[in-house]
Image (cartoon, rainbow, N blue to C red; front, side, top):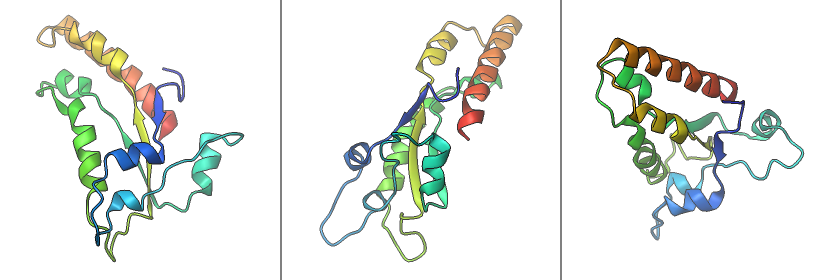
Length: 143
């Protein structure tokens, strides 16, 4: 994985698609920040221009979980977690303005490779751990 090639940066439209707007309510999804077109800015420069205190990045994969003997399925938690965050009521303690939703890192190619691994064999675990190393190599530069 090279630096940011698997990073999918979310637009305001994508955030709005996950936010259920109701009259007389203010949801986090109405207030969170997103990066607008990077244009000449690098990702780091664009993030530094943001006033956000927190940056949220989704990591929809469960190869490491399965390689450690856990049950698969964690990869599917990102979208429900994001939707729940965006539909939480904005309040005096956390308005949403201090949060930037960056997007998620797409691991679909690695998840497909992991589907052919037998996690119950030593060879399979070694292959899975190699994939975890690839994932770490893609996550580290973004974080």
